[in-house]
Image (cartoon, rainbow over all chains, first blue to last red; front, side, top):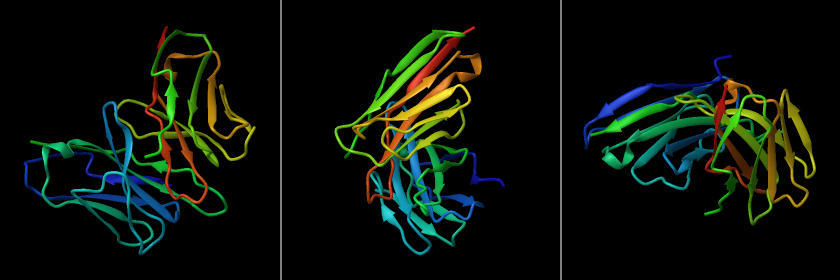
Length: 114
Length: 111
């Protein structure tokens, strides 16, 4: 089991460029999440998907879009990157069945927007 | 939005010492989770707690779900250098799909 995988690991964008961060999990989990982590701010939820075919906004959704492609994959898109989106992005997944709500995280994507 | 107050923010200890940290909220939670994050890595789940009063161990780590359901505690016994990192608490309220995270406790262990 690879768990949760994310690509790319590092990315540098210029202001206004677009990109898609990819996330996949092989644990047959129902729910998937995208977070950003900034110094002193902890982990903040951007979007989540409780099940295949559904997505919902989290705490900081502005400037992002998501797609739950299938049960395994959940992508995060920046349409027009801004310096304020420089951050470390983590994808997570959760069983969300049988009363199990723990989330398992990927290794992260370190994004710099210049 | 909902916040978890995690303390202390940082700790500097000697190898072999025991460590205690906690997480508190003004609201009730149904699930408490503890994670550790090493530099440049994603958070790794250490312990999950699902019942008030529950005490669960994972090696030298022990976590408790507070009786009031508004707090949780993590203890590390006989710390070693590889315990260095940031420890996060997270909680889930009933009916929610989402976790609320604390801002972390940064642990430094001096050999």
